Image (tube, rainbow, N blue to C red; front, top):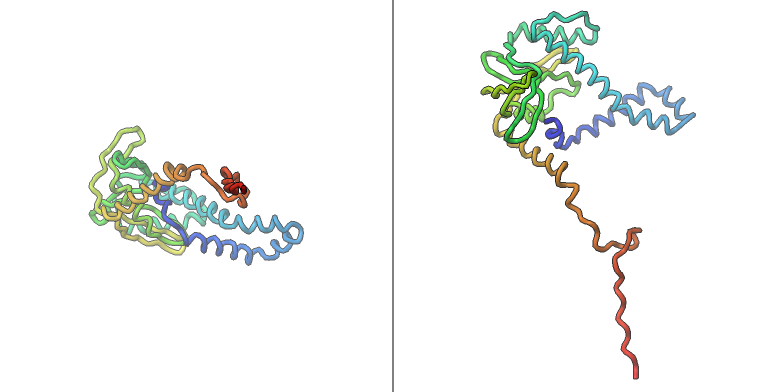
Length: 246
């Protein structure tokens, strides 16, 4: 499912990557000058990998925080946590106290028989009496619109596949939400994930099929090429002979 949503263009990533490189350069200027004086290519390599290092650190924190949220949602008291993680747990506890959600399924896989896709959602439960499907987010950049496509795909799947392999028909879901938690606070965002949004997900599903199954075979072998390009040329055309003079 993530692979389908990733078919969306993400122009903002170019600016994010540029900012990550610039921030790393400013924060590590002395080190970079020293490295560049010894090995310019090593300094360039260090800079161009700055976005990957940011992503890896964020993914590590996000995974640990998701595990803590799941345990707390199941009624488990969090173990002794690192201060960097504890602040997320404190905010999640505040969410639980304020909204008193009733969790029905957590960290389950869905399958669409009709459209051939699968994915794993964070939570399905009741908030304010409504059955909603949701996602925990900890990204610094906030909540992005494509999460609506993701939640719509979960909502309109055919089954929930339980850990024992059994299938549970997808219940009638009334909406979606994202709980966005950061060290500085948290917010609960209603997310539209109705059939109209789902149609756009299915359009991306078609683009996914094009990318994986069709795109690689649409250009045939060249019939003739420009010799100046360095490629093998086709058969030469011979100029007509002049008529013999009497």
